[in-house]
Image (cartoon, rainbow, N blue to C red; front, top):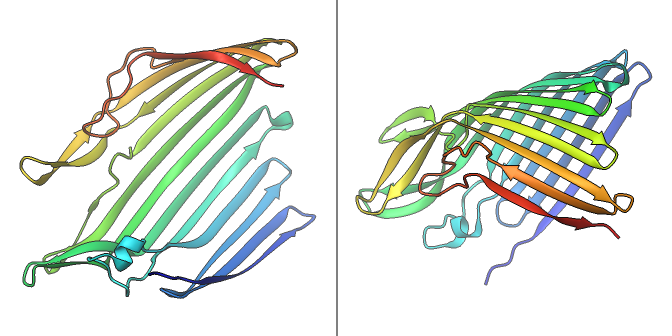
Length: 282
């Protein structure tokens, strides 16, 4: 009983100059029979200096359409607008001679408006999806790679992320941190080595910071807010090849230190475990 139509018009341009300045731009107009016209764009300028340092930025918009349930169910609202986002990011990237060292740092901010919210009217006892909330996120991403020996590479990364939602509680607006299960701080380091032609070994260490979580208690019929502890995982991977690398035997040892941790309240995670197998390429 439901029929929807959409027409999209898209254009893009990419300009590269001899002195290292480049720019890419794109725009798309979607015309939808249910929620009308929506336009999105991206603008990505960059400047490569002496083939070693790259400065770049990105400005882009995006949107997420309401689901069929949010539009047409018993709680649906055909007048819902898509959730609209605008993202800005900028950074710098470094390349050393022969790419022995590469590094990249990026900061970003993202603003989302018209977030779909499930609204309950305590006077009429009716519920409906409406556009209400606003979301603001920002963060930092840093990553680097080092060729520490002829066949050995060290890679590391660090991420920082935070965000807040603005919503209504009663007649007043309130703002609070709402990125559930997402750590503010996340760090990792990986070292991989082609020991010799047939043998490859890598080791990965990842540290995940504290996270907030929430779950529904079926006995009290309330949402319980909780905090998930930080944890560290150490993995080791090795593979050995035969028959001109057409046949590989591999083993993946995960959570070697047997860390007990939680990714989502009420769900288990694996302790020390091993994956092993044979990979054949024809």
